[in-house]
Image (cartoon, rainbow, N blue to C red):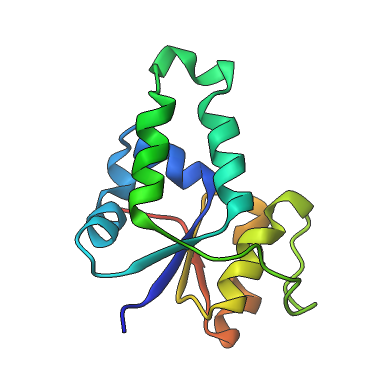
Amino acid sequence: DKPLAVIDTQVLLDWLVFADARVARWVAAVTGGELTWIACPAMRTEFAHMVAHPRFARWQPQSEQTLSVFDQHAVMHEDPAASSPRLRCRDADDQVFIDLAMAHRARWLLTRDKALLALARRARPLGLEILKPAP
């Protein structure tokens, strides 16, 4: 079985809009089949909204093409139920990333979000590494 990873919206934008080198290693692992990226409908909806947001217009993201890459590589699961109360994100909008990772025992949650990164120390004993992607 391949390890599972949850990728937050900011990291997806780094990958699919900005082509940020900091995520290249993780992108290669996903596209090369070394790990399984899991997502849910709520995550796809948020990502689709962000890709279409006017503030990203100068990067000219191709919404349909970007979403097709999402659909090609993400293994979709149902939106998760709430997870352990020990891992409550202070930003309710980001809770879905924690909940999906915990529900499916993901090994990693890749994020640059401070509210999610603040949970890293408490998540580690539960088997989840919350970390920033680095080259």
